[in-house]
Structure formats: C-alpha cells, structure tokens
Length: 385
Ligand code: PMP
Ligand code: GLN
Image (tube, rainbow, N blue to C red; front, side, top):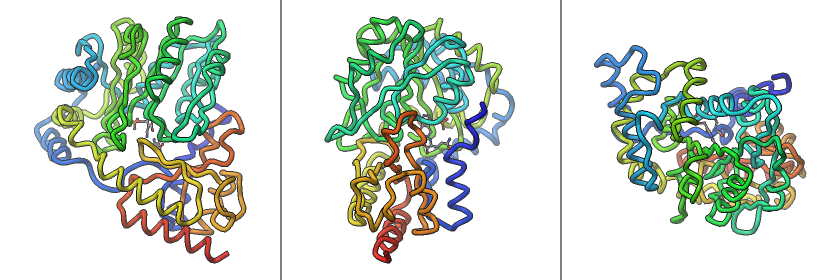
C-alpha cells in the first residue's frame, strides 16, 4: 500500500481545523440524522442491542433492504441469501473486490473515482484500468469506445458509481446500457456503488444497473444508510447480489469486521421503508443552488451536479482573481485555506490521468449559513487581489 498515504479527506479535514477554515472538503452533513432515527438507535442501545449482531446483519434490516429494492426498483432479493449488511458501503466495496478479484485480474473503473476503489483494487492485488468521464454540456459522459478499449482478457470486474462522486452525475439510460452491453459481452461482474441513490435533484431518475436485462445475475448493488439518513458516522451499508456472488462477499466480510453497528442496524431497519420521504433531497437541492450561485458570483466556472453532495469547478475557465491564477487543483486547494479560509478537495486525486488536474470539488451538504459564509470568504479573497 505504499503510495496510498493519508486519504485526501483526512488531510483536508485536518487542514480545515488547523486553519479555522470552513470545511467544504470531506462530504458529511453538519446536521444530525433524519427524524426519529437517533431516538431509535438510543432505544435499541438501551434495550440491549449491544452484542455482536448476526454475521449477515439482523434479519429485520436485511428484510427492509430487500423491500427497499423491490419497492423502488422492482428488484427482488431474498433477504437470507441475497442481502448482506456491511460496515458502510466502504466495507462492501472492499469485501467485493477482495472476494472477486486477485493478482492477474483487472478492474475497470471510471475516473474520477472514489478514493477507496483504487486502494481496494490494490489490496486485492489486482490492477485498475480507467475510463475518463468528461464534462459533456449538461452532465458528464464517457466514450463507449474508450470503455471497450479498457477491457482486456484479464478484465474481471467493472466498478460503477452512480449517482457519481465527485462529479454529481447520474448515469442515464444510454450510458447504463453501454456499460451493461460491455459487461455482458465480456462476461464481467459489475459492482455498483449507489450510496447517493436518494440524493438526486430536479426530478432526475436513478436507475440501478441491476435492473437492465441480463444484469441482475452479474451485479452486486451496494448502498448505505449514511447519505440517505444523514448518519455518515454510523457505517451501516449493504450489498444485494445473487447467492454465489453474495456468498463470496460474505466469506471475506466475516474476516474484515465480522459485524458492526449493533444498535444502528435496528434503527436503520425502522426507517428504510420511508427512505424516499426521509432523504434530505429538497434541502440538498437548495444547498446545491446556494453554493453553485455563490461560486459563480465569486467567479468560478461551475459544473452543476444532478445529485450527491458535491459541485465541481474548473479552475482553467474560472476568473483569475478567485483562483489566485492557479489552474492546478492540488496547489489551489493547499493554498485556499490560508488565502480564503475555505477547504475544498482537489478532484485530481481521483484521477489516474491528467484530465482532472484543474477540477476542484466543493461539498454543499452544509447548513445554508455555512455555505453563505464560505462563499463570502471566497468572494472577499478574490476581491482583495
Ligand atoms: N462510495 C461513495 C461514492 C462515497 O461517496 C462514499 C462515502 N461518502 C462511500 C462509498 C462510503 O460509504 P460509507 O460511509 O457507507 O462507507
Ligand atoms: N465519501 C466522503 C467524501 O467523498 C468522505 C468519506 C471519507 O472520508 N472516507 O467526501
């Protein structure tokens, strides 16, 4: 794991603390979990849910996950053989990659990619091949030819993330069909990270790739309670997959954490039937609008996201006053706390290629007053130049 060092999220959150900056780096909400969920966890804790839960997760949560997939996507999973509770989506991703890939295998992923993907591919001893997502006017897209060229005889697995961190893109039907076509023709397993499934805006539609013809049997669908219910510290995630794939992941998961989150599992089970209503979609959409408008007013060129917690700016096409004449995301983000009192994430760290060198990610999962403060700081730092 030489070369992986400290995650960018830890580095930037530490920098926010030492410089007293507004932290729009690491993506976590600054408000507490949705209605009732905290009391449910407290009650579970007081009522004795404090010892190891069952290895696959408590039955009530596995049942709730299966019902969630059925209700939202018309996907049927058997809660006993096709659903596994994990320590966040992070463990689900790690266990899936460790279970299904190894030395000599290649994993195809889209860049920019969530940082744990590259680390888990490395932990598995496999190699990654990336396909670049590029801004394409309204959203982000990829060249299907580039996806085809990324496949080799060694390719075992394709790792997909939609809605997508850090771009905020939601893969549309055409893009999903292109991924499914490649997966089926090359007989690949697909791991689909859908942790932002309920945080989509402007009426956009999230479609799990498992719903496409021929895909359910080769797809592991991963999600988590963290984003949907604003409890990112609880680390309750899950995987849905056909029995042979799920069994492989369960085998690995047993030896990673074994189990986690005893009092949180019943609390999540109790609200998952209202995920669609409880997810803070409207509030986040307003926060997105607030941040994007503020960044634009300050002089940034903003790629407006359709989903997630994050907006991306392109330093190359933003005003020199507000970028400090920097087009390199890493040096911009290292300097920004001192210059403006704001922390952001250089999206370039989520790329293998140079395509993201000028992209910076700002999180908007913060209270409006915090976003206003950040935008004011950015404007004032720009005006002071
Ligand atoms: N995948 C993506 C795309 C994420 O953004 C995150 C966390 N923000 C995770 C996985 C990890 O989820 P969890 O906190 O449930 O482990
Ligand atoms: N997923 C969060 C983000 O992208 C951070 C999670 C973490 O710190 N590992 O900001």
